[in-house]
Image (cartoon, rainbow, N blue to C red; front, side, top):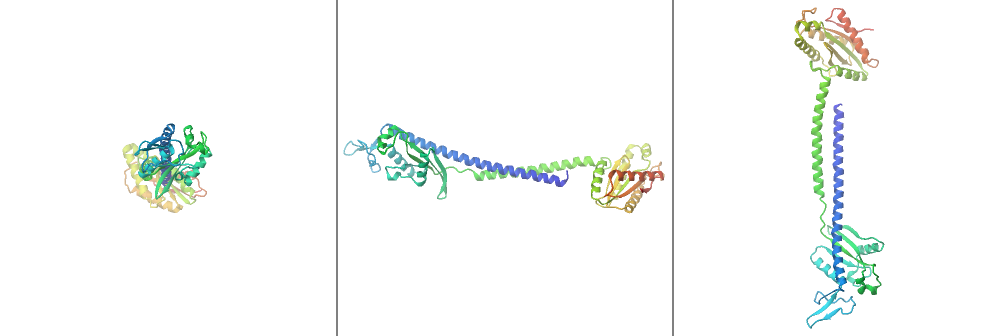
Length: 400
């Protein structure tokens, strides 16, 4: 995997992580909105049920008598016998039916500026019970079979929740409402409940928390990516670098030679090995032989000047040099320079012709448009064998 490919995959991982974090944020915001909606509905529904229970209790008892005061006057819309009872000159009781009780409770709630509710109907007896436009629309929906209505609205810069459910005519209600034509089970009206302080969903907290998670994940991806990149480079280096000589190995050579040929440019190949290296090992031992290989490898590597040129250990005491965009004469000049550089190491080798460690070189140069890796290696190998046959410590060029 190249460095660019690795960075591309790292970027894709980062994009996927941010996409996941964004989707998670969107889902949590949605869930928070749903939870807020459910909380508002359940709260309003619970208050509606409490009001309906109180109304049912009052209706079953035929209403409740309370003293007439400045705030509680007899209900002029309640036409029933014994609506008012004169107990004494200072005490008169008046009957509070469920509708009147609901309205008074609503007025008390409005004084506290908290939760508010309103009893209403399409055919109200009391003008104050006339429905608002939204309540009227809800009442008409109830007649079509809708069981409840609710929504968030913004008023005076504050978001509130309003809820409404229908009131069904019960048997106890007919005492007051039979004359209006209602029958048991009919929708007589409804009660709207307004919640002015519904907790808002924690948008800022959700955004900040997901942003923190996204950034932390990105940092982790970058750190882990760098660690993986380092590990990958180390593994690749172990796979492509010869551990003894610290120069590229044969695997690296094979891959990069094919890559160089694909550029369709002239290319020269130099195959070389140390003369009589087995005899050197036999006389001085393998540790000395390993040191000789290291010195020769570094000498070959250090004498390469161009960026695209490279030297690799081909096997044993054999080395190969790849010279992209190089003609035959240029390769010959470099090989001669390398031959002299190895001699300049002045490593004693009594079994060699020059009594010093020396190398033989075989060169080939081909137009990469027609060349193959096998052909290049074969031609360089033939030139190397010719150098050995002609006495070693020399440079030979393959010719057709």
